[in-house]
Length: 551
Image (cartoon, rainbow, N blue to C red; front, side, top):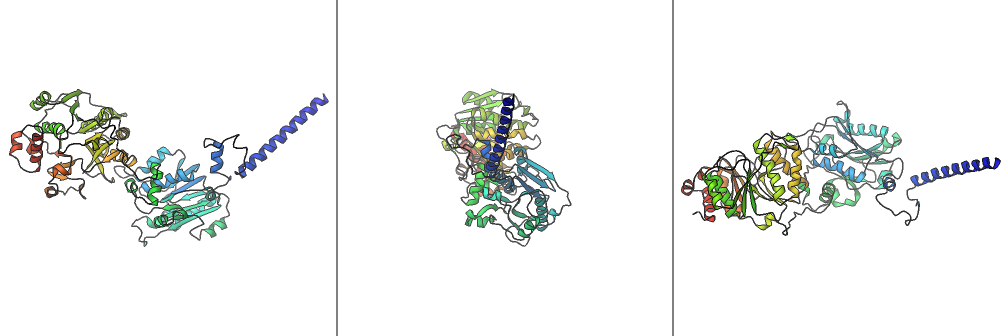
């Protein structure tokens, strides 16, 4: 009995010693991440080891970057360079939480080009929104903002990051610093940029470990830098290794970073596209888009002489092998009967779509656009509207791209440019078409340019390597005013017939003309009218008839 009790006591003592030893061992390992637990042969290092990842991120219990804070103290739009800032925090700093303190929620432009903040909220699960009082002092000036940030960090700790600050790295050394800071306050007299909010900017970063002495912080922040710096864009190009981050005080959009072979361009591409390489447009000549043409044709209506010319141009000028009409009613009229009898033309029945991703589609023009994506995704080929006339052959070099699209001349508020899908070339199961189709989750039935013009541009910004945005693919003409996209001011309404003097070589400068209004153009009401007409449009029409052997 006594020996049994002694055995229990020994067991309990051994257990206690083991527990204490384990706790001490865990404490030593936690406080000293360099301590090796076992030989590499026992547990090979791997990024899938969660404990290893956490120790790498937070080698000491108190660091300055577990929580990152942004202070948004003005009513303005959240732009692409602001997006890059938070993206750099996610990828370089790797915090447990990002708190976005705001007095005014980021503003959206009318057609929502600058939806970058909305994208972040939808994709970062640990992004926390904190609405501040509108009378907070951070709205007044950079100096007041610094005071607001300083007081908040003294109380809560964490890492403040300026809204224009983009990190290139954030090493363990930076995380362990009790006080890490590099900031600059700007004023309206600076000539580096014209910006009404410049006097309220507090660029750079300030990191404070919780519990840091307030006097230390206050005294230190009388200087603008600790050892690790947030550099200006100029300094970042001159001596990148000195910079922990770069402050971006110039408007930047995705297209601005595609081809610039400088340090900032490399960093921005790495953050946004995952690679620092300059964007290269992909071509694959082993698999071409099929030489077939697709027309979308819904409703009971007559195929006119202008439409007839369009089909002939697809077959004999663009040199496509077959033309398909997709719709719910076969075209009517003598010219349709002629096409069926004499040309490689086929009607394919399909119903008008009523929904796309649960969104009601009531506008017939929008329904046509949705069908274009369905057709190109399934079959590939060349989509063209019935008011498009081809002026040159489509070479294999165009068919080797994933997709090819041209530009719309009508402006959309806030957008750099927009596309027109009246002419659209794509391979079967095209990456671009697939992504474009997914954007229809955000379909707007009352905004025609948003669906077919803005949404493909949004895809283009995110996948620039798969779309050939060709300024020579088509020229849009409205009321005899043509808008060649290679002109500097092509999307200005004031362009008139004078522009045609620079558009004389229509059979050299563009692959097609898209005659949007009136319908039809007067030259194309009949063959007799066409033959009696003069000018560019008449020349284009007669060229089609000649290539088709009709004259």
